[in-house]
Amino acid sequence: MDYEFLSQEGIPDYIRSRPELAGVVDPDAIVSITEVGDGNLNLVFIIEDSAGKSVVLKQALPYVRLVGPEWPMTPLRAAKEAHALMTHSALVPELVPVTHFYDQDRYVIGMENLQGFRVWRGALMEGLRNEGVAADMGTYVAHVAFGTSVLAVDAEHHKELMAQSINPELCKITEDLVFTEPHDDIGRNSVLPENEKDAAEHASDPAMITAMGQAKWIFMTRAEALIHGDLHTGSVMVKASSGDEGAGESRAFDSEFAFYGPVAFDLGALWANYAISAARWFALGDDDMARWSLGLIEQTWESFEATFRQLYPKRLDSRVWKDELLEELLLQWREESWLFAAAKMSRRIVGLAKTADIESLEPHHREGAARGVLNLARRAVRQRTEDSRPEKFVELAQSTLLEFRTE
Ligand code: SR1
Ligand code: MG
Image (cartoon, rainbow, N blue to C red; front, side, top):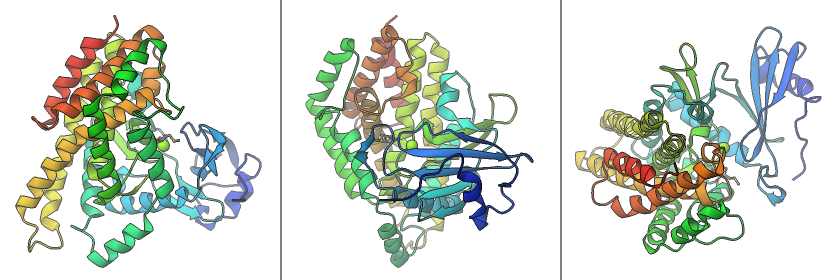
């Protein structure tokens, strides 16, 4: 695919060419253009003018940025992202950035610059306690789960939406990196030498392989809702109401992996990343911050459940979708959250795209944190059917991460 990439020099003219940006940012008074893409795939520019107005331009590259042009990747993912952002924003505008436009010729999304916000993973890594974000993400997932499902969308339109949202290339990344490669390394996995035995035991664990087979099946077949598809703490922006901490605002962004998939995949991704944050803080000896991180698991679930229960009475069709279905769905999603959390934890330890929470630890601490997370995943898939309440996951995470930490 041949298209022009955005550049510092070309951006003022590009902004002039987009009528949707009139009044958003002044192309003749630009004071800064900063490339801030720290994800694995795209170019991201923040453009500010002298009046303090600003915009984000995000462009999909035709390859995976993390690896380079030798891993081609469709830039059409930007269309999927724009569609998901706008769909989700219509359901829960207070938790999703505003999308100004999608440029189908150059695969660019123009979106709101969230001034004063920062990526949640970075805040967590500094030990900042942004209260309310985990609950906000539960609310977001619930609105998406209800509002894009057949409970809220007319059956015919729902099928059109599903067709419009297929995202095969990005789904394949998840199918490979999250569910398969942790157990079948094709040369992209890596761990510290001290963790090689842990990774090998994890890779060949029969219960884990069976569970990941089930998780992959659910991921590939269960088209429940237009899920975010990559809802880790690096896909959430946070802003404290004053200073760095405390209650504030949150936004879910970076939804290029969105597709019609299982609701619990987003919940499990959040749980996994909270556990990874906890592993970091246990490793660093700040047990209080680690426990705070684990507390986010219950906050997200409780808010998800409460919001979904509030929305359920608004369903379009209650002829056979009675309260029994509501209870079954919630129970099923709670148990599947354990399964997907296990998948998402493991891949971030052994697979290609790791997390800064763990990678920035010095090796002695990283060793125990990585071992703890892998063992938590293996225990979680075994225990999920016994009692799937989130507090049980938290208990298991705390005891496992403490057991394996390297002092
Ligand atoms: C090749 S892309 C690697 C990872 O980055 C994204 O954040 C997704 O999690 C994906 O699996
Ligand atoms: Mg991303």
